[in-house]
Length: 250
Image: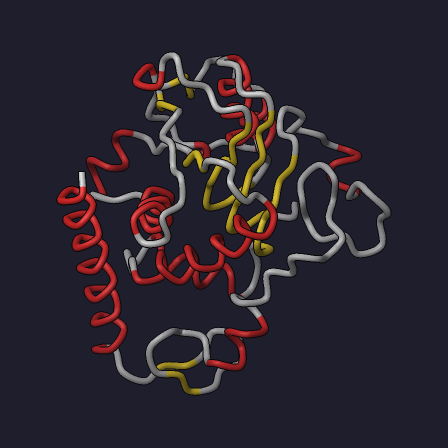
């Protein structure tokens, strides 16, 4: 087991330095937030502290979706009008999906810059340690065709870093059943899906943790997280939390 862990940590190091070298070869670039000059990350040091590092752990959040509240008392306007994640106990999104977040997500997912997985994993670690200490992390499994076509998955990257670099308890309790893409569906289509896309991983038959934290990259309607929560609770998990990097406001 120690040898396997060392090999996996070695693979993580290769991903880190490969991504870092790609950024280095690109040379100077403009910060995607303020437009100033930056070297490695596309966010300058000052803006990094104001954006990526600013995860607002103590901000007042919606009791349903976890978005930071502006003027509402307990539940945001969107969740009052269109609830969609009733099977989750709590949700904690780190960032709103707009402006710099859109650009950064594009660089990470579409331009395959895996260095950002390490940056995001460090921020997620802070949330897990602050809000969900000691609770196992369950990554939302990717479509099999995604791994086949692109060779990697962003959520798996982060969960691997959490497990092998930061020694977090990561359990792959769920299995993906289909290859359909949520991003090609509208809000009503996402919420109205009848077929099961996620089922309990039988490799964990006989072992059911009392509480888990689902991990995903972006929450749009919450349908994916809700489906995962249904599968987990059907297997006997009592409490299902969720942490996502980004949340779409409308």
